Length: 189
Image (tube, rainbow, N blue to C red; front, side, top):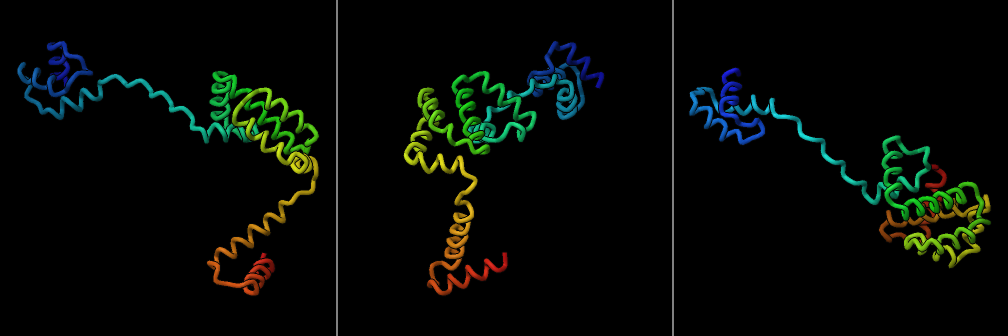
């Protein structure tokens, strides 16, 4: 290896250069080793490359970070979300409204919904404004859902289960067989 080092020093070639060109130059100076020996040695001596810039988070990742409870985020996710929110005031505003809505949803404080909708419209955030318009279309039902402990979740679950059974039978069965299937699966669960 000392021969390669002295040959590189004599030619004044940089380690980062073209290995084939360097091999030709040191061979002309009397080096008798193989090209692979030069290549392998110089590859070890090459300075480390700068770390790659991390790719930006996807829309799905950011949406997940915004909609999950902050306690459920990893430290890395929390750091990346904070950095993202510092760069985008609109996203920070949207994050605030999403967290407020999540609080209404989990703490059943639906009486705050009309005020939240008004604030969202005033902020003029396109995604949240369209969501708020959808809530306004059936404001009474949404408010009731956000304030009452009673909900239609179990009913919706049963309807979904019945539709799944119906799909499994590929539409070949009539109501009597569907009824038996539903009753049998209900007994087993």
